[in-house]
Length: 295
View (cartoon, rainbow, N blue to C red):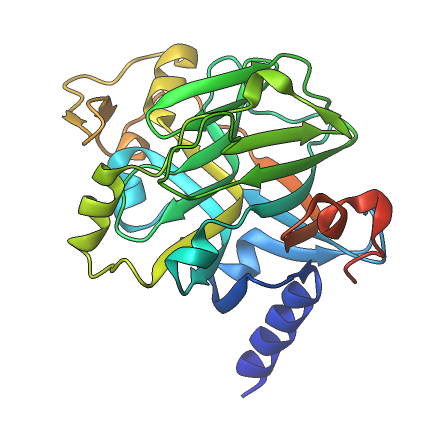
């Protein structure tokens, strides 16, 4: 009984750290491949605003199910968001996320691939868009290709992101389907003028029960490291013999079950803080400068 009460209290604290505005309707909140006790904590120190922030932490070898096989591990908060009609699906959606990476962040940016937050459509393998670490900065990917990179990511301080998306498949000249602001500055090279929800997405999603009148997209944030086998290969003191690889649907080759091998090194423990998570239909609804703290 006490364990159930503890879980309910933790989830209640999490929900207090996110705010939502119409037309977004959050139907379900769940954790993705993680153990709440080991990988998540509500903290009151080093917050972006208000009283609390969300701390995510993951260590070498901590993965579950398919992630282990594909060479990934993660601790993400996963929000399911539903749009109930094609008309509403044409409305812009704004997301705000504040991210803190400690100065002693131990995961080598150059050799790493790590999502900070992303959006996925139900039944589709690749994210619709992803903001991930890249080199000493971060990058934005729309589907299978890179859209832009920023090379001056700040460690030891908070980074405020605002993303504007339009998930419509209707192409209109001059219309902006993806925009990004970082610490109040619009990153023009990240602006995308072509719909990134394609017929291929719809076809893939329909095979999993999706239909045109009830599109389902979820936004996730937290730590998601992928292609960890590549990282271990670069820093390894010794390379395992007879490593097995497999090809993903995207065409990339991954080392199968990389955590089963003795590399002579381990991936450092990774810690990230998140705060001020917002969804809305305008920039002013989600901008940290014009809103009270979510908690």
